[in-house]
Every structure is written in structure tokens, then in C-alpha cells.
Length: 127
Image 1 (cartoon, rainbow, N blue to C red):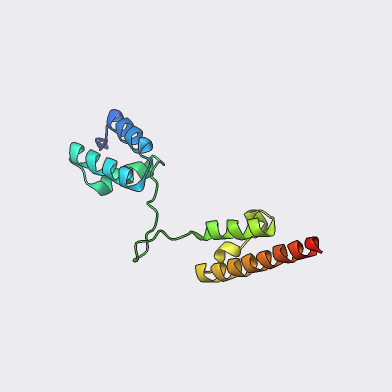
Image 2 (image 1 turned 30 degrees about the vertical axis):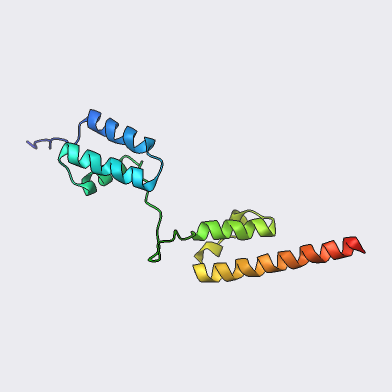
């Protein structure tokens, strides 16, 4: 006969963790919720995080570079390129596989071209 392992968290504990975590709005607030529940329940922060992951409510903190700046995601850069082109990001499949540096070069080129076109239109309308 196989003994059932006792659950690490009761349903009430899970509900409280999830409720508090979902109410948190920022990365620092979510980290504080994890820390608070870890202390209250005598668990590690990693254990609380893993429970949130298992419950599919965990939100990964935004990446902050060594300079302390939040970096822009590839998806955001691709969306901005798509907006300049007047299409959706879904119409640019595979573009998100490029490096961030390459995407920034492409975006800068499109922004410059877009500005040049707008200026040319203003000159033509003035004539």
C-alpha cells in the first residue's frame, strides 16, 4: 500500500497566497507577498514561488540591466516596427528571432524613413 504524501499547502493557504499575489501590482509588491507568506508559513521564498508557478499565477519580474534600466523586450520592439509599417506583429513572423541590437537598427531606420516621408509630404503640400 502506498501512503499519500501530506500536501505542503492547505487549500486555505493556497487561496491566501494567490489572492495576495494577484492584488500586488508591481514586481516589488509581488516579491514582498512571497517573502511575507514564506515567513508566515515557515517555507522558503522558492517554495512559495513554485506554488505560484504551479497555480499558473506567477509573473516573472521585469529584467533590469546592470545599469539599472529596464530593457525593452523583443516583442515590444517588433510591435513598434509593425506600427510604423502599418501592419500587425503577426504579419512579421520570425522578426522576433533577430537580436535586440538588429531590431533596434531596423526600427531606427524605419523611424528615420518615416520622418523623411512626413517632411517630404509637408513640403509637397506647401507647394
